[in-house]
Length: 501
Image (cartoon, rainbow, N blue to C red):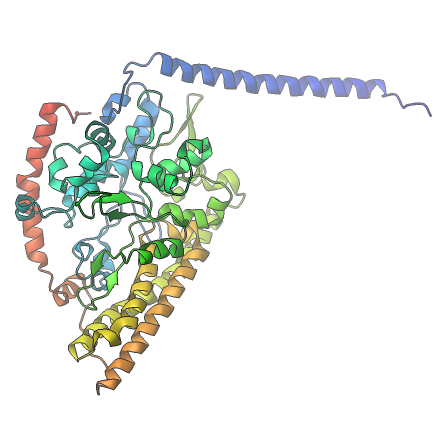
């Protein structure tokens, strides 16, 4: 059978289509080469080539003006969605039950919603949880480890002094050293500007699991540079030394789920503090954002943190990553709509619907946990024994750990709403078991009436019930901000560790 020949017009159509495809591909290659050439030109002709760890953010401005200007925009605090804003809202005022949940721990004094990276240092100084003058003089303020995620000055100090020496100091010792807010050298090699892990705790966590973080792909690094800080952690005893509780450690040995971390802590009989009311050994979650994100659909599909929080943008034909790290809802045309085909309003309402459902369980769990702590105190006051209260304390510990793990993880109800509802529902079950057991204990001691509940309807009322002198705390902090902080800033300016922009 003879083969069919193309008609003349078909041959010309095929030829024209092929030429058009070649032309388009040529334009794409040309554009790519131009962009690569421009990027190469920037790196080969930098005005401020750097060696080592350069923590002073303004020095990057001349070579990377677009990235620098968008980074500076993290100072803005005007964004607000349904449940959160980019300002430091007083969460304890909005949710006074949280004062009860953290009674006996510094978080019950002050807990604010997070602002952008430009505010990292000032918010650290101003929060009531950090030193007041009397505590600074006695050396009893927070450990220096608390600075770890707040500044590129931290990897600089770790590099010059050693990691353990940095952790061993108390918080005040680094007051005039840690000056530059979260910036360039936190995520980039100062010389090559490649993405780089600057905090050893993440590297060490990988090593304990038999992994090498140097094997991470570029896409994985676009999340791992965030996972250095937006992660669950605790302060472990120093290895092979008498020093206690200041070595930053990630509890990832068994994996990234809540139960994995709980198993890690339970095997070590670890707790962050003893609750002032219920006497429960409490696990205080930090901010397991990376772990929660890995449980959600975006994390499972390989979407990186940067894809949603640092979307690509263009300026004068140059494509670059927007460093105004913030909620994806603030720039949906460059975040959500890159992959999704629904309208902004539909997608926004999808997010709010998931947040509503998570928030419903959260509200119930917070209220029940506060009652459980108060009722446990009542049981102790009415003769309950340690043997009787053993199960109660374990139920409260598990319930609060689940609440805190979900709540402390920024963006959890978007990252993995099903996982968050699962975690908090489990927490609610443990909490109700605790309350039921307390009722049985009190009945054995002859008390069957309703347990009296204090008025904790505001932050100040809840603090007063817990014995917290908020007036004294604020007076001490004001003195600290007026007397100590200006000295730190002056010293840093004189030594060149802090530059005016």
